[in-house]
Length: 153
Image (cartoon, rainbow, N blue to C red):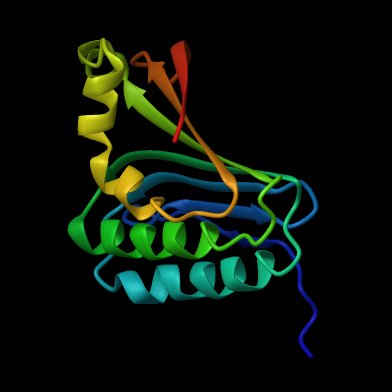
């Protein structure tokens, strides 16, 4: 059996930085995600996540800090979310951290606005076992966090 280690993939002009740590439960995908072959980027990530959910940390933080991603990337991110919802311990927490430009963050004033904007994500988690939290961050032009909000799904 192959040893299970953290997964780090360096970013390129078209692919994100990936840093998945099985010891801390920090799963970070950041940068731009416009690969010509999304499977080449995200298949190893999905395989790693499938291994991770066998023995997850009590708190898993999926940090999606993508300044831009294409449709192919969004399909793979959906697959990753579908696997993460299979964490089999109901007392465990899965936080999804989404980083947005401050203007987009400010447009979401009410809980219903947040639910509407992130319906594809919340729909994926309809039958999730772990408790799911969605944390939104409003960032300025220097990518510094200016505001944040937490919503439980």
